[in-house]
Length: 195
Image 1 (cartoon, rainbow, N blue to C red):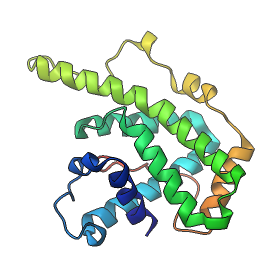
Image 2: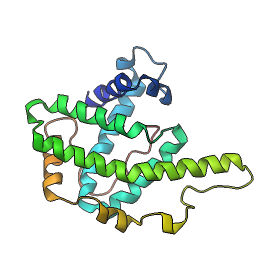
Image 3: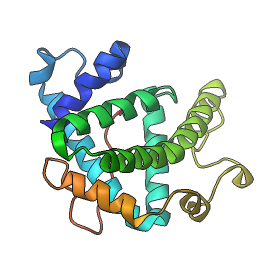
């Protein structure tokens, strides 16, 4: 149910965003099997990202890969604040009284970490894709950027706030709802379509 609540919040904030999704023509939208599936996958991904906060060096390349895949779906840097606001609003509604200032601050920090990694990776991947389309004879690889312009996973991880308190509040807020973090270890983050 929380994944289903999350997407309408995105579309309330930015109605044009609906056009990015394969389920855009399914009505009624709240009953859409595509929206329900996508919402479930995204919420599972959020759980896995939270679980990954314990190992940021491993999480960073996964988030970069997720951003690179979203470049293929016309996702733009401007979408990050919209998604972040929708996520925080949905979590706040779902958690009710458990959405304390500490929990909110932890989630704001978590989203900031995710966006800080994904947004530059999305921009780089979008630029590589545009270059490839402009020069069809030259195959562009999302990862073929100048190494000096990229942060290594270790550099990225060390620039993010690694805080036991952050993880504790985020994980604690997930436990009572559908946002339960998956079992620790293994598993890929969401690799489906846009957002």
